[in-house]
Length: 481
Image 1 (tube, rainbow, N blue to C red):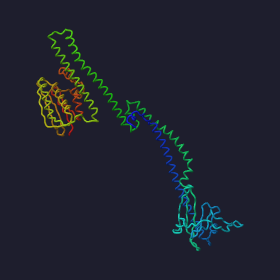
Image 2 (cartoon, rainbow, N blue to C red; image 1 turned 90 degrees about the vertical axis):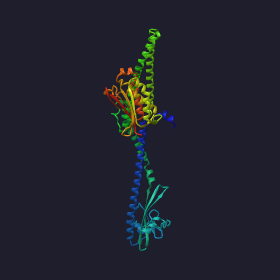
Image 3 (tube, rainbow, N blue to C red; image 1 turned 135 degrees about the horizontal axis):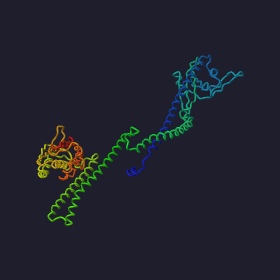
Image 4 (spheres, rainbow, N blue to C red; image 1 turned 90 degrees about the horizontal axis):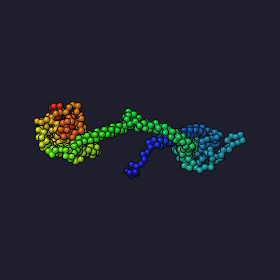
């Protein structure tokens, strides 16, 4: 089956598969049980036959040996009137002296045995039971008839008489395993029909009992983990619950993000539209036009920065979704010391405009990652430290290797700090501790969210320490190489 056929194929019914499996199991169990029972019965029955033949042969042989004469007539007088087993008396040279199924017995007028006619049978000198009995004293042999589906059990014992050695053989025909199976076919067929009917009813009841809780589970996804009917479904229930919660959280984040983006874009657009309208209608004085144009340019730049950050977050979200299946794009060794120096050089002008002293302490450290993304992380952290600082403050960039052998990048400032209740939320999108200050400094509220995503893509850990009025330290610790 091709991949396309597998995708378009109708799912199989679990109920029907369970039912078919239970019915097939029931039928196979019955067949196996009857087969085993037939084999065991046949084995037990044949063992009893062999024991019976040995006992009866030894008994008549002892009685025959105790007689004064040792011939066919003497043996016939000892045998019962109707002999179920077949008795055969064989001379030492293999000549058959008497056979209860092939030798005629002569009776006198009083009904007593008078004599025995000579048995018209070929020599038994080559028969295995005769030869073994002559050699060992007794023999138990079984010969099978493939055409009659029977097997004949022989027991022979040697009798030492004054006239010479003779062999008394007793035999019985018994149905073999195939014959017994043929005899039990009607019983077997009836049992299979009954078991099939019982298995059908039982499988219907059992599958109904098994599937009903699963259907109930599907109808109550809100409490799926609490209502799991089977232990084997716990991982599935947890996965469904986690996925459902993740979808709900993502939907909430999407709505909040859409609302925040709309709000953030609406403000500069309103300003741009207002100033442009004043210029268009001629209501603005010629002396104010350059001021209005500068404000329009500033708001446009703010929108460009916001859109740029949104596009970057979208790209990082897409990369993070595939992070479990694919490595981060453009993974390569990155020199953190060189990255820190470059960031300090790029941000020097921004620091001077804000009257902030920017310093760095770059110790050798190398991480494996995307240099562009790590550069963005460093610049966002540095820019954030400059924006939320005071004139005359300082910002220091540091990198190196910690005592645990893990590389790190750290930004420390002595700015306004972050309140304790806001420290867990500063990495959320559009979250601002001081909204009025953010508007004044031109921040988009997405810088730390971008930092968080880049750190996640590099399996890095972010530690934040801050105190209001004292400053903030943010350390990004990368995994050991």
